[in-house]
Length: 437
Ligand code: PLP
Image 1 (cartoon, protein in one colour):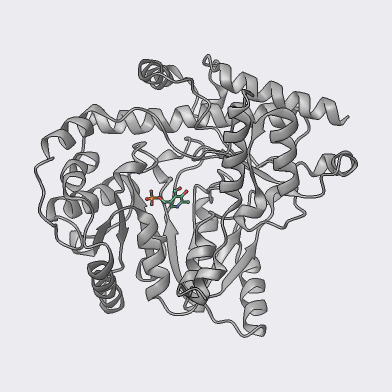
Image 2 (tube, protein in one colour; image 1 turned 120 degrees about the vertical axis):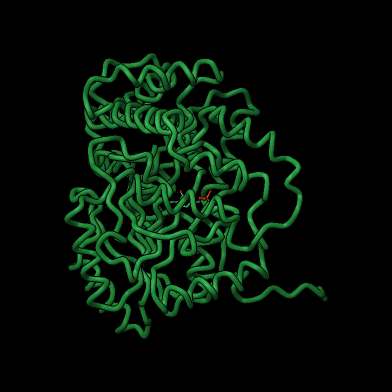
C-alpha cells in the first residue's frame, strides 16, 4: 500500500486542456509538421532596456525583502495608479508579490464566501477557487453582447447559487479579458460596481491587461466607483512582456476592512512566499516612475497587439466565423457555431474536439473554450496572437516602432505591417472553412 495520501482538493484539480494541446503541438513538431501556434498566451516582446540595465545592477540585492514589498516600489506603484489609471491609493495599501497569480489565490483564500466568475474566464480562477475550498459560481455572458457582465446575469447567478446552498460573496472580473480580449465599457463597470455594493459583494478586479487596451475602449477600473469593496490586481507580466520576472501587486481599499484584509494577506504571504525577489523589486521601480521611454514602450506594445488581433478578427469574420471584436490584450474568442452542422459531419461536436481537429487536420493550435469554463458543446476557442511575430529582437523593436505611424486610434485600421505568420494563420482558417463547405 502506498504511503502517499493526497488531500481531497488535490484530486479535484485536473491537468488542463492547455497541457494536452501543448503536448500534441510538441508531438506534431517532432514529426516535422508545421504548426501555427495560437495556443500560447505569453507576451514576448523584448525587455525594455531600462529594466534590463536596472536588473543587472540590482543583482546583489540578496537579502530577504519586506513581505509586502520595498517602500520605493510600493510608493511608485501607488503614484502610477493615481497618475495613469484613475485609482486613488497610497503606498501602504499596496502589496507586492511574485506575480499576481499567488495574490489572486491568497485573496480567494482570505475572503469569505463562494466566488462568481464570468463564463468564460481565465483558466486559473476556477482551480484556485476549488483549491481554496470554495464553489465556483459561473456568470453567463453572451458573445453577441461582447461578453458583458450585467447586473441581470449576476442576479441570476447569485439566486441560482443560493438555491443550491452556495454563498456567493466575491466576484472576479477581468477587463481586458483573457480569453475574449473584450473590455467593459465605463457604464457597464459602473453598473456592476453598483450591483456589488448593493449586494455586499467584494470585487477582485484582475487588471493584468489594463495597459494593453488597444485604444478603442478606455480602461476603467471598478475601484473608481466602488473603492471600499474592490481589490485590484496587476503586474509586469503582460504590458512589459516580463512574466518570468514574477512581479505582481494588489491594491487594497482604505478603511478598517481593507486594513484587516491586507494584514491577513501579509500574514499568509509571510508563511508562503516571504517576498517577491529583491533584485526584481528594485529594478521594477523603473516600470512605474514617470518616463517617456516606459510609456512609449507600453503604448507601442498595446498598439501592436491591437493591430495583430484586429487583423485576425477581420480575417475570421470575413470567413463567416463569429467573433466579438477584441479591444485589449492579445486574444480572440471565435465561435464556430455557424459551421456546427458541417463540423458534426466530421465528428466535431464540441470545443475540445474542434481544437483537436484544427491541430491534427490543419496544424492550427488553439485552446478550447471548455478550458475557460465554457460549455463543452460550445464551438468556441481562444486564440492568442502573441506568437504571430517571427523570432528576432531587432524585428520586434522595428514592429513596435512602426506603430508610431498608425494614424487612427484603432490599430487595426492602420496600413498592414508585414506579419507573415499572421497571414499564414488567416490563410489556414480560410482552408478550414473551405474544407467544411
Ligand atoms: N490573470 C490573467 C487573466 C492572466 O492571463 C494571467 C497570466 O496568464 C494572470 C492573471 C497571472 O499573471 P502573473 O504573471 O502576474 O501571475
